[in-house]
Amino acid sequence: MQPEVLLAFLAMAAVSYLIRVAGFLVGGRLHEHPRLRAALDQLPAAILIALVAPKLLHGAPAEWLAAVAVIGIAWFVDLLLIPLVVGVAAVVVLRGIL
Amino acid sequence: MISEPAVPDSARAAFIAGALSCAPVALGVLVYGLVFGALAAQAGLSLGETATMNAIVFAGSAQFVALGLWAMPPPIVALSVATFLINFRFFLMAATMGPVLRGWSRPRALLALLWVTDENWAITMAEGERRHWGAFFLGTGAVLYVTWLAAGVIGHGLGAVVADPKRWGLDFAFTVVFLTLAVGLARRRRAPLMWIVSAGAALLADRLLSGTMLGSSAPVLVGGLAGAAVAALTPRGADAA
Image 1: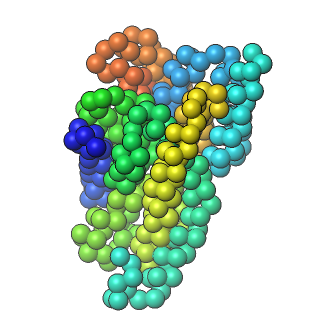
Image 2: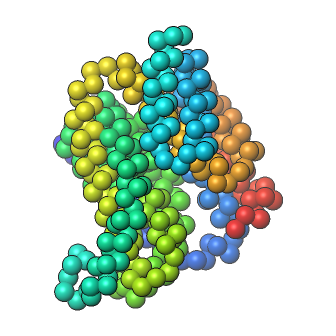
């Protein structure tokens, strides 16, 4: 493993860990600031949406249709396994048809 | 760690109870980890690198994003910033860990924070306050940690076998995982304006900034911050506790 690769992993690990330590030490104080808390609360969803939107835009109709199926399933099913299997299977089939 | 003689049996029982209650989630993490391993192989990471990343980073979403940003040499600043933004939710989760780790020495409590991730944190909170709550939490974390490590290694092996990931739709697995996680989060907290602003800002950043130093991380950073800003500024966001 090259040193830069290990360094990148260590940087990611350190960032992730220091966030937890900071959160633990600050404790419940952030809960007193509802707006900040709301923003932090929504950040993961916002990031995931921001991540997936360009991927879908760059895709083809096969990806779009499969994405609709995934959204529909994921709305009702909590287990990642099911949308994952259906989504991947759907895109394989749709790419063959379209 | 938990089997030291000073820890009474009931703590061990709590550890096992935590591990068992995390088993169904571990199945999801297993699949997620298999996909991660396969995609890591596709992104050019060796088996050792994949295992090392899983062992020391141990943060699924951030690791998937890292694969999307991966290049040689690794863009350490972009990786760190993306990791910071994606994992900033751990700040709040860790903030709730005080009661779970009550009575623990400071070094032990800080060490336990390494295992705060979405799934096992949620299961620990859902369990509610109990005797040896900290041991219960360690049980949930141990199961996910071992699963994540093993799944990454196995997935990496399988990934090398799959010569053309596109043929198997594996390239789309990335999108499905993100989409599923986004829908899951969105379903629990309905904020349509935030979703639209995040997606819109991300697409705009994708068009305008994809050639800059930020590269493919620009949509994540811009869309993520725009969505969080909306959550902070809407009255609804202020109401949500």
